[in-house]
Length: 178
Image (cartoon, rainbow, N blue to C red):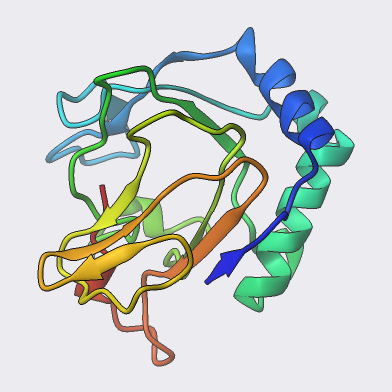
């Protein structure tokens, strides 16, 4: 689902300002970890941060969380903490799923991740697309798809939402994205 103009330019600037001083090399789930551990992984080269409790009530963050909850069909209390990512030229997050595998300790606090909302905070001259390599392109939004998958390109203030599970709660292998 593509949501045009989900955030105003002012809201985008405020999220960037709040996040900027906290950005550090992004982490991924540690392979084979018995606990809920993360580590720097080669597949993810962006910088990232999660909003602290102090910044969680910032109006643009509340707007993002409220919109994500409404479109996902869940209460705002079920939306994870906002994560902000910055990708510089050449940085990537290789193909991955946002759902947790069966038996993962990350399932314990709140259950399976049902959906992901991505808000684009700036425009880029090139790159920046989110690709679903196994999804047949249907020409959604600004995306161009085909037999090789579906690509969606960023536009400042727009958002996208996709589901990691189907209506029965089964994980969706077509939700793999990069």
